[in-house]
Image (cartoon, rainbow over all chains, first blue to last red; front, side):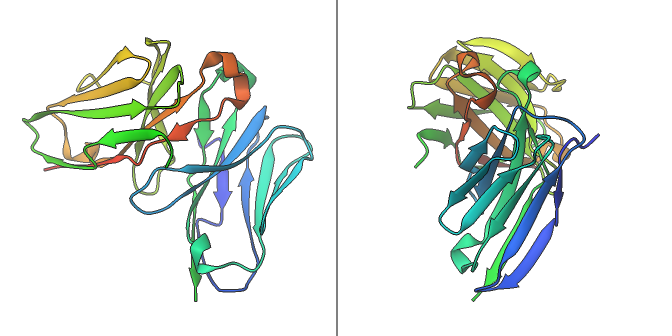
Length: 112
Length: 116
């Protein structure tokens, strides 16, 4: 059973376009983290959201945690080739301690 | 630079070989993790160590054997692997159980393992 569904799985866009990646679940998470992974490297943490309805901004990236803490979105404005990578969402539950549940990821390619 | 290093970065081994993967964290963390990342699959948690004690074994086959001699080092011993074990093996660390649900995990660059 896939607890975290990410969509789309693949996304190829032109430089300057906007995009949104979604992370959905039927389960409630106490926090949700977004990572970006580049080829040959491990995932790098971008942000952690913990409060329902929370919005966090990181330069051109905007992260939102759903009110019910079951879903999250990542919006990138004016995408650049350097944004290319695999974006992973991961949820933590209070009963699971530090254990994270990962989504399959969204492979983003930004073409110059 | 994440403060978590892994060696080797690439490993090719036959099914009868024995090899070990090494992970070292320089972040003063107390928890360490092994994950398996295969194509088109979510990251799979394999093992968790907290304060050198194994707290989770996620139904991993016995041909994978973890070892955590101290809070800074984690090993994954491999023997008689199968071709389907080929994947990227990622190590991560975090502050540990005290950190609670928002305990951030920091990943190493991974070891790309190919089993022939």
